[in-house]
Figure 1 (cartoon, rainbow over the protein chains, first blue to last red):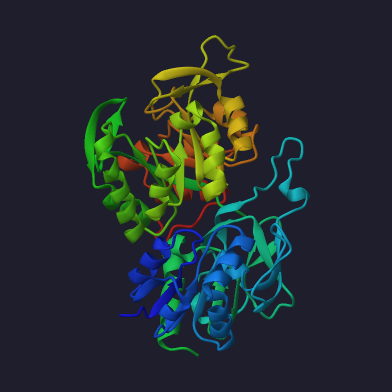
Figure 2: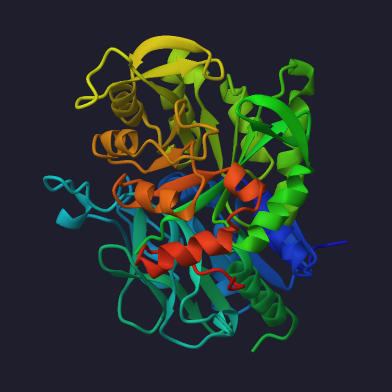
Length: 217
Length: 262
């Protein structure tokens, strides 16, 4: 049987945790390695860790770039995680600039500035931004329903997304300055943090996503 | 602002958690996945499985433990112990584990840190070191020496220098085990924590000696560590994770709030 939620495998990182977490919250989730295998799926997940440029190449080689563009443009239930958020943007400066999927206007840039550098006795903030950090929900979306004000999620990244304008930004997080940690529009949601590694908070968001897949807006 | 982390460490021998009291008398403490689930429910931020299995044939049991954990516990976890090759790294990460810690193998062949970091990313390469105070150094200017093979064999390598070199080679984090403090439950070696944390830019995780919430507070403030590893203090439930977190939160240490207050 075709998975109801298809997780794109394009060779960028391990997908087992994402798959198991979605299954844990009741989804029929499975990994797909070709765009054709997404036929019949009602939700699409784009995960990924690693370098932006290599990820774009692999997405294109497998034809997943077209699938994601069509899916997101058609406003079908979509979840991007980590690199799967960044790839939606116009371009990234990581070993680049490298062109992204250009579904969300904006750029992906590296954490930089004096706050990340050693200053005398103080080592400065760490890059990569790795660990648990707070989520500030700035706009309602079904996926962040029920996420409390002091909720934290798990992050691992050195680059962050800067959308043009404020209409996509849904969650912000502070690491030396406030950055967009999740974007959304309609049935599309994508986060810099890893819901599959964020304990109960993450499972709540995945549950919300599964509901969205069952009953899209 | 990033939260300071509390990491629970489980020593695993042939698929069972064991707890040792003062290095002796290993006792069966249960199924690792069961315990992982319990600590997750109590609000621990991360888990580490340390494989102390002596026989090589039994190594695959650890991979099964990691794979089962990834099915049931949705917080980051590390696997360490007996990691020797890039293939070992790959096998561990394939289970859904987030990080791999290396110790003896890295001291024997430091390039392995770089190879693993280039292949899998620095964020999943944890350099673990077993540190012992040099008895010939003055207490005002203490020095620590790295030990290998489970803390049994001295190497003459200076801990602070090795930490800096490890960072340069691509390690993403350092776990700092104090051999002197380990198992005493009398507190971390805060001087050691501070010496290493001030010398590197990557996160340092204090390990060995936690017996009271105050000890974690000292490592995370004075010791400048980003995380503190606990074992006995949690296994014996003398101070549940939630109690430790409340203690830290009351003293304005940034921590991840637990779902269930104590």
